[in-house]
Image (cartoon, helix red, strand yellow):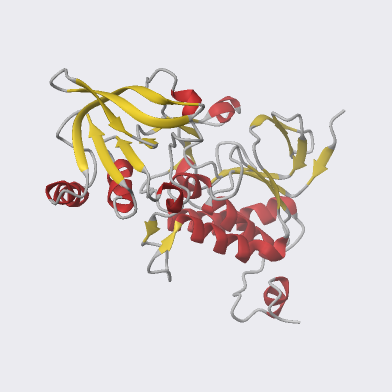
Length: 343
């Protein structure tokens, strides 16, 4: 029999919104366990754009995805949340007392009064381009995200794609690469026009190369890439020196098992009310990019707001006999003691 873990709240997703939910819930003495399919906290923000600057977090003129994650982790440290990474929630059942039993693909079972779905776009994976043998180079020469720019310094880089990710990393990595070639199948780009203009300026200055076409093969040995084969739009075939390949073909987004939990869905999003951000199932809340409601904006700061209101309702479910008292961290000595900033 699997060990059963008892807690107040299970949060599915450890991205920025899930992390901030720990803070809000912690102020009300609600204990949390977080489950995430990734191998660390930060969600899509830290997985795909750890060094990409974010400009719309209140009070932070500029912060990277990883920096934001690190600061949120520091902020929630006093509440001793438990993290369970590299796991997917596969089962969610309501118990006779109104609580829930949550099961993961590792066979673990968590019992709680409240479930908070903060899974962003759901379970997501980068789209793998149809290049023979590309799996042999993944993680050593082929990367679908940039976690540390220094890992690409002084390499011959080939970036493939026409969206914001391809353009952003072309502009950033051009500063440190030995050589850089951007490959796209057409002249038109899906990314921001300003980024396109900056990329073309680098090409005109001879600092990077741009090639119309598509990657058809990889050359190298034991997972170490030496060149990529491309077919141009004119039908010519050629090899480009490459020790690192970055294909940016977007993400495959899937709700995964969430779709089987009996929650009302709207085009793979979870409708919620705007008072509590509760789903069609009492005690199950959805915050962040995975929810939808009239006027919804997919912004991190919107998710923070949703986490704060969700917490008020969660407190009433977990401790129905206790009065919910609204307090400010700036003036409440009890909250300051919980945060460890006052004896």
